[in-house]
Image 1 (cartoon, rainbow, N blue to C red):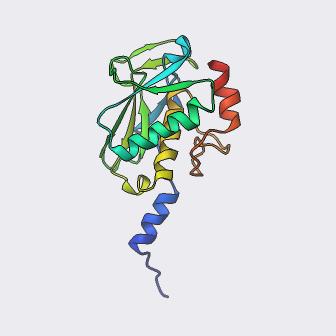
Image 2: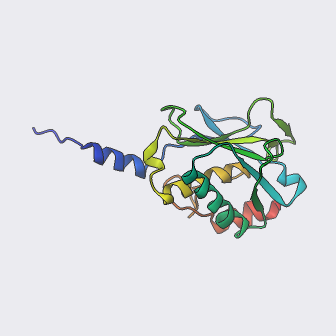
Image 3: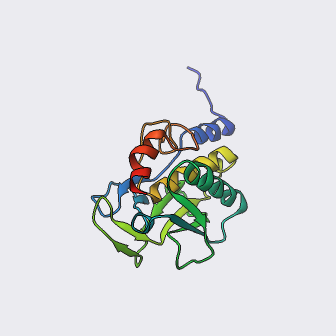
Length: 193
């Protein structure tokens, strides 16, 4: 019996097609297993209307560009929600980091950090100062603009309350689609803004 050997290139290609993402749970509700996990939470925009402010904490240029593009194309121009970059760290709804967090099983995730301002009740509990963390320990997930934009769209979705879905959407874990579905927009985002 002959054993087949996978090349390193085949392994990397396989990894690039199957994203490793954090599990998602509604912030303030019963959490799912896994660490880290995305805390799905609407930020203050739900209550104040208008703009979801995003601050970048020394994020590398390719991921910064991908995130800003998705803020504009997938959210601001496609929904009633406006997303904007801010230089005000303290006033940000979302703070974006990219770092080599280690091989922890998550390419990226959103969390409401300890000490953040929170209010409201499930399913509309809010977190001001959510952290969106891109884990650069998985370079195969950041090596093309499509992959970076998919991750940006997906994680930004968590910051406005979207969970994983099976629609033609960046919230679908089985496809690398960098935009929201009409279901995400008409059923979840626009009714709240």
